Length: 319
Image 1 (cartoon, helix red, strand yellow):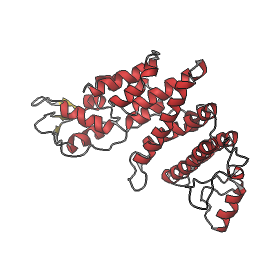
Image 2 (cartoon, helix red, strand yellow):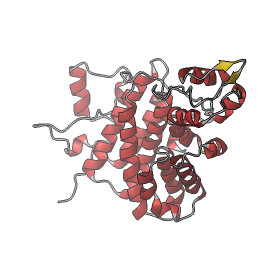
Image 3 (cartoon, one colour):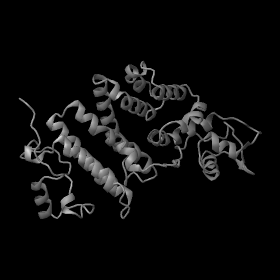
Image 4 (spheres, helix red, strand yellow):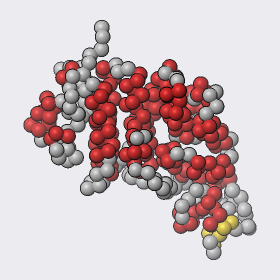
């Protein structure tokens, strides 16, 4: 039996628009009825999701992604977590429509990359949000679902046209899971191609796995901005490991130097980190003593500011 093909040429099916208007459930980011976007809906008894008039074909799904990233993502009249929740839900609906229709690998190659980059960016953007406001675990779950699916497709569709995308996505997966041996194993088929960005990500992950953090300082700024986003959310845990391994008892270490080593963008954050782990700070110097280090506290969640000198929508859509 061949899969159903979508016939809805709007971002939101007319049936859903009518229903949501009747239920007064139009989202505050959907001020324009012409720009309503289909919600994610779970399959339930009596609710069929595979009706052609409710499904959007691949071209409409791609246009929908573009609208969400170009138009909705830039909205600043509400807090970013509201923008995130809206886009996240609508992107889930995009993936759902594509899955029901069993779209081609080439369609998935167009659909998944911007969704992956969006979740990578959101992980960084929302890092300091309260867990009740933004769920970082669910966000990364969506990131991993999409990137694993795409990498599996890229293995079967490997050619010169997909090499650049493979380089970006495989290295992004590795840098999002630094020190994870299982992820490195899954990346093995691509590592053999000797791609520079993938090799750099592998070397960094292996160095973290072996407790050597010097390479992180040397290569962090060499990675693309979207990679820095997923690395930055791991820095608090990595900094805790770095701090616990430094030992300069009776030999105070300059805060300015420590700021560079820990990849902080300001000395005050370094001082805050030292105080958090019970390390003495005196006259802009820290006493790095393993005996004093408090390993019982959780890592300190300090956001690492990334100079995103590119348009965010352009970065996510890679346009």
